Image (cartoon, rainbow, N blue to C red):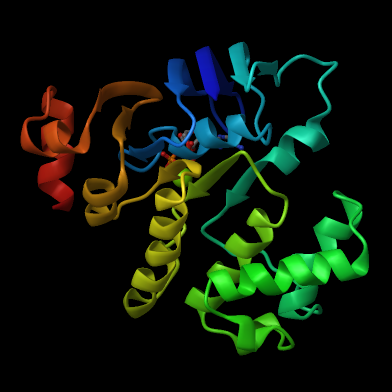
Length: 243
Ligand code: ADP
Ligand code: MG
């Protein structure tokens, strides 16, 4: 489904940082990969590359065989097929919850108003906030807003869902409701790449855990092995600091 081959990314401003150094990763359909690592280790840069929000300096990224770094590739099509959920929910404040979920369906997927509305209501039901369809984002809790953002990403029928610390901005009591939606998606077979510090989620849901440090993948393992018997000292140190 996803085949990342030897990508590199260096930022030059404000100072030179090697954000990604020779990162390769293959992800199978239906697989849930959790990416963990210290702040600044390149996790966000990595998953942003999968959505073409960042462009690697070198290397290749194939999504279902399509070379997303090929200048001939339609980036808007890639973005529609690779859904992304961020730490900040980025909902349109002046649109209702339903309109937030409907908009891209109309514009990107060219769905009729009826078809888009039907899909929106189905997805709002799925994430447990159908009753909030007509309210504005600022009338929702953070957890509810993040569930709208997930519904919005799903409305494009993505092949892959990327999550970049989706619960980090939430009050603790709202983390569970967002993780539950993500667990449901995982069970339904969605291919997912999730950057998170929620180790419970990693243990329960991940097929594989990737540990990044200084822009490189330091370790890659099943959650069972990863947490029980980490290979590297850097992983051990990181786990001892967060668990
Ligand atoms: P993480 O998500 O693991 O915290 P990031 O991928 O955000 O790490 O960042 C990796 C490194 O790249 C950090 O040193 C960060 O400061 C730097 N970086 C990330 N994005 C940019 C950018 N747009 N411009 C300059 N430096 C960046
Ligand atoms: Mg990050």
